[in-house]
Image (cartoon, rainbow, N blue to C red; front, side, top):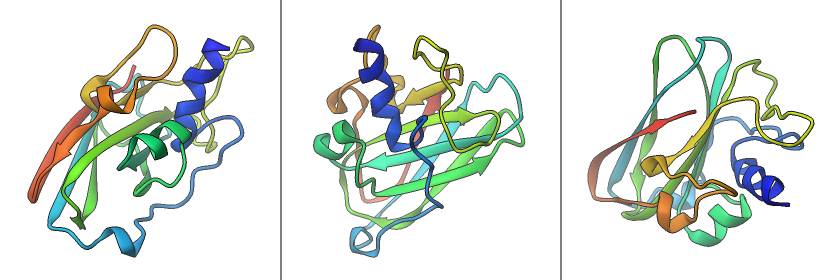
Length: 153
């Protein structure tokens, strides 16, 4: 059960039953003055894509539903930078990411349920069992330009 809960949080950006949507930001979420650049590092290989999802509440982060923005970006170097469009409302946000090494749109898992592809969260939040809380992964997005880094492992 604990393993299932950990991987359920990643459904916001990919899981065995989830296909990542194309990059998107709903227009009703673009009424603010903040922008965000997410730097993702720690890839084992330069193959595939990185899938990302940006959340603005504990409820959406915990349910893996209704992300503010999503993206799938090719891995062409040791670092991938996701520039989320400008106009984000300042507040608390969290990002979930995983390295979709085979670019199949799914977080690959072993028979026992743990991921075989690397993943990470904003603040590099981790727990031994299960996903981190929104509080652990949350960061403050201010007006103007904001940058964060996620290390996938």
